[in-house]
Amino acid sequence: MEKAKKTQSNPQQKMQLANSNIYNITLDLNEELKNIINKDNQYTIPIFIPHSGCKNECVFCNQRKITGNTESVTKEQVDKIIQEYLKYFNNAKSIDKKIEVAFFGGSFTGLSIKQQIGYLEIAYKYILNKKIDSIRLSTRPDYISPKILKILKKYNVETIELGVQSMDKNVLNVAKRGHSNIEVIRASKLIRYYGFKLGIQIMVGLPNSTIKTEIYTIKEVIKLKPKQLRIYPVYVLHDTKLYDMYKSGEYIPLTLDEAIQRSYYILEECRKTDIQIIRMGLQSTDEITMNNVDIVGPVCDNFAEYVLSKTVLKRIEKEVKRLNINKESILNIFVPKRYISIVVGPNKVNKKYLKENYNFILKIKGI
Figure (cartoon, rainbow, N blue to C red):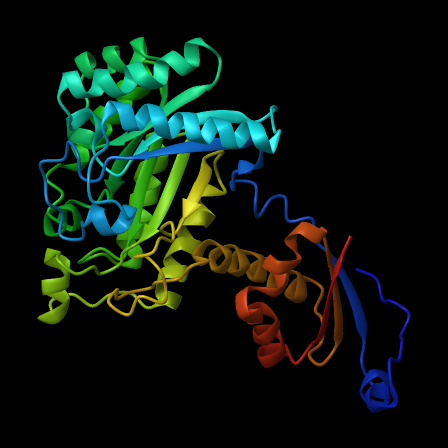
């Protein structure tokens, strides 16, 4: 820390500045944001198969609303989707980027073997002709077996994401997940044993969950050694059991602040590892948006930015305490330009917080 030369921008601030200390803090934020994956070097071709392959009905699930799709795709449609995306990528002239086909929205390995192979054959031919680099899919822990994994390996699937949601037995039961945490452990070990990248998806705010169960979940997930993680806050959607529970008062959804706080604790645990966090918050669609009043819960179109801003705020407060910076001081924070919006926070939440709690005159500057 060093005291900077005092400057006076206008007469109105003259008296306040004369009685203020000026402090500089420089933050690179590499440690705080090290788990957040940079997607700028990759293209994803999403293939949505809403609810396909899944024979279970979790209390929160309405994949047709979440994905914005109502019907599964045919093999011909998969081929067409890939071609259309490749054409767009070629026009974008970003030939150095990795291209991945990702099957989302359902439990891929719950499909019939014939259906799985049919989809995989389409994607695999683009790997053979070097048009795409990899295949990713999502599924349930109880839909993983050596037989299935051998098929996926044959068609060069690289990443398998498991919808884990929680590792707490009671939370899994109330959410009607239909599998146990033991099955999560078994499936994760098999996936890594067969040489796949393991991804895991968890949810914050499930019925009967608490901050304690969320922290327990992420600690147990870390033991499974996944490469990647997705964090989803629970939304209450129409035509789900959870909506009925909400209407009856049996379930109270998290507020946005509560969901941010829980996700912040999860991120803090992940910072002790090399796990890549590839998403926080649901992907916005025509249905999944803050403008849809029919969706209840911590709905937010830029959820990840709120969580990351909270992480950065904690770092700033740590520096303020370490340097014993007086209230009503002038605080200059220097950060890489690409992080300015995170430091300020969505709707300037960090700037407002520091003003209200410390009465700083705050200036955030890019370097």
